[in-house]
Structure formats: C-alpha cells, structure tokens
Amino acid sequence: MRILITGVCGFAGSAIARALLERREGLTICGIDNLHRPGSETNRVRLRQIGVKFIQGDIRAASDVEALPAADWVIDAAANPSVLAGLQSTFSSRQLFEHNLGSLVNVLEYCKVHKAGLLLLSSSRVYSIAALVGLPLKPGNDAFHLNGVGDLPPGVSAQGIGAEFSTSAPVSLYGATKLASECVALEYGEAFGFPVWVTRCGLLAGPGQFGTPEQGIVAYWINAHRRRRSMRYLGFNGTGKQVRDVMHPRDLAALLDVQMRQARTGGQRIYTAGGGPQNTMSLAQLTAWCDGRFGAHPVEADSRERAYDIPWVVMDNTRAERHFGWQPDTPLPTVLEEIAVHADNNPDWLERSGM
Image (cartoon, rainbow, N blue to C red):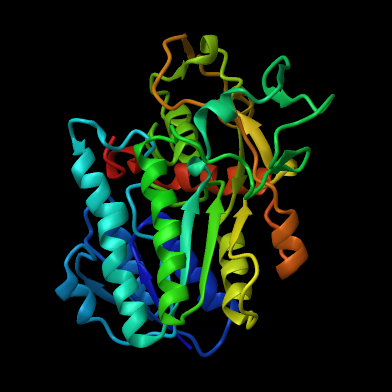
C-alpha cells in the first residue's frame, strides 16, 4: 500500500511514518514538507534512513501537489498547530488560513484525481471555548477535575469530550481552520467518492517533539525544566492546574492503521482520540514529575490571562474503541520518560526547536 504524508518532517508526521513502517509490512511511504519549522531538517535525514521517500515542497502550491506520486491514502499532518497562530506578528492570520485551510484544497484535489483516501488530523481546539470554560470543574490541590455530579453538557462525560461537544464560535482562529477543514474534507469525499476519516486529536507528545510554550508544551516543559530555564504558569491564577490528556503519536498511528483497513462506508466519520482519562496531567503535576526526575526547579506564577486558554480537555475514546477496537497503549509515565531521556541526550534541543 502507498501512503502520502503531508508535513512529514513535523513531529506528528515523522513519528506516524516510523510507527506505520514498524506496524505493517509492504508499505511505501512518500512525504512532502517545506522544512519551514526549525528542527525539521533533522527528521528529513532520519526518514530517508528508514526508507521514506522525501519530497521538499509546499502543499500551498498546487503545482507541488500535482507532481506528487500516486498514493492509496493521504495522511494530512501539515498545519501550523499553535492555537495562538494568527495573533502573533511572526505568523499572520492570512498565513494561518493559507497553511491550514487553503492548502487542504490542493490535497483534496489530489485525492480526487487519485481516488486516495484521506486521514485528516484535526484537533481538540475545534470545540467552543465558552463551552470548555463553562464545564463544571472542581479545583484539586494541583489540578482541575471534572465535576460529574449533576447533568453535564451534551458530548462530555467522565470519559472525556466526544465528537458531539459544542463547536460554536469562538473556537480560536486556529480552531476555525481545523473545523472548516473537517467540513470541506467530508464534502469532497462525499462528492467525489473517496473515503475520509477525521480524527480530533488530544495533546500529542513524545521524544523528538519540537517544544515551545505554544506547541509541544510537554516536550518544552521537560526540556526547559531540565535546562533550568525560566518557566511560568500562565493564567488560572498562576496555579498550573490546567489539565490535558497526553497521547503518544505511535498510538495515533495504530488508530490510523485500523482506519485504513476499515472498509465500511457511511456512518460516523469524525472521531475523538487522546490519552483519555487514564493519561491526564496538569502543568503543576508535570512540574512535580520533573522535580522528581531532574531535581527541584521553581516555576513563576503569572495570573495574566491569554486568549483561548482553557482549563480542562480530555478526549473520549469510547467510540474509537467501539468501532475500531482502539485504545492508547502507551501510559503517560512512559511518554514522559521517553521525552526526558531525549532531553538528557540532546542538550541543545530547545535551541533546535527555535527557542
């Protein structure tokens, strides 16, 4: 089977490529990347070493996409993943929509021509910020917890947030590009007869992730703590109680592998996938883990609120398990330790990540 991965030199794209080659024999993987992200050149070299055909190009350019070899499936992992993208002077709102939405049309046209299936990696940030902020939460000593007493909003349960949770605006400019991408991809698949699976991913983390405070927060936090960088808890009264579930990309690759094998048509096409309730952690809890691993290091409290900050996101894997037999296999302590070992072995990782 032939697979094309867009954004193949990013963290998600490169990790998925490696994991798929380890999982299944007979795969041919081709990837395209513009190498815009600091550190991506490192992944290009490693991917070539394991047999991935790399093509340098930009999926915003239709001519670059049209020149790509035919594939049976496309994994769209190309995007600017920062929720603050479009608000900063270094990356404009126009650039955000060109990268995350405009380029998708070229990918969909490719799928139309080659009758290739599409695996679209979406995000938990498609959900309504007001609805997320309004979730009934109770603050523990070091983390927010969902208060399951009484009625919960549609689409949320003790298992986390599912596909039916509100996507009403505002969702952030970044979230809007991902939500619109889902809609356009599903319409293309319906109109031109190729399969589309959409996976709304929770927080991805693992060794080799380019870490910054806006994207790759777990890798950034561990590397910054290891190097004794200045660190801050932003918002939520500077407590660090905001919670995310964490998923290793090799577990995401396992889900994508099953989706490519799944022959059914119709039915649900949008799924949520993440670490789930068993793999959640707040920033304060992550700091405590780092203190135990590297020695104590203080974190400054900064109560200033940032646009789009949310207190709690945990993805519900119930339907992915029911329909695909999938659950994440990598426990959170393993994810953290893998990142820590990588941090030990790469003392310049934050600089290579552009920090």
